[in-house]
Image (cartoon, rainbow, N blue to C red; front, side, top):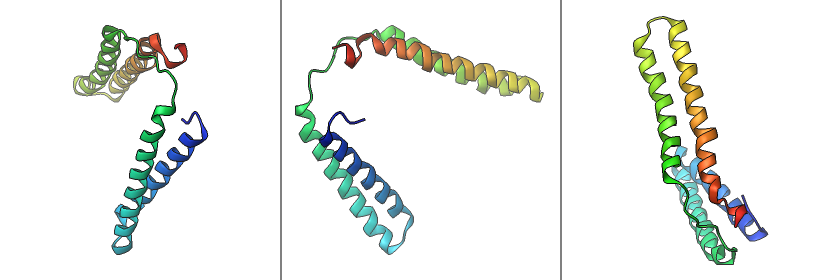
Amino acid sequence: MAANKQQGKSFALFLVGGTIASAGLLGAALGKVALIVGLVLVALSLLWMFKIKSLEGKVSNGLQPPAMKLAGVATCLFGWLIVLFGLHLSSSVGGRMVFAIVGILVSLIGSLVILPAACNKNAIWKA
């Protein structure tokens, strides 16, 4: 997550602020104060992150293959559609389970095989 000490501190501040803000959503009077304090901490951490952004090195901004990224997203959505329509096509529990497992496998192939292959063409560690 963090490449240096400043980024680590700003990210930790972001996590603390987000946690306090989340806790403030559930409270009453004191919760509103916690929400405001948490949002202020999140805003401060974001400002700190933008301030140290200029200290980072060269970032790889090469073009990634859009067709392969679209194929990965389409595969993920197709797996979801298999599950969705499989529930309506089958009335038995076993049939629905088969559709669900096949749909999950198709979605996993899209998200764990196709998308990483598309995004690793110009990864930051290849700069």
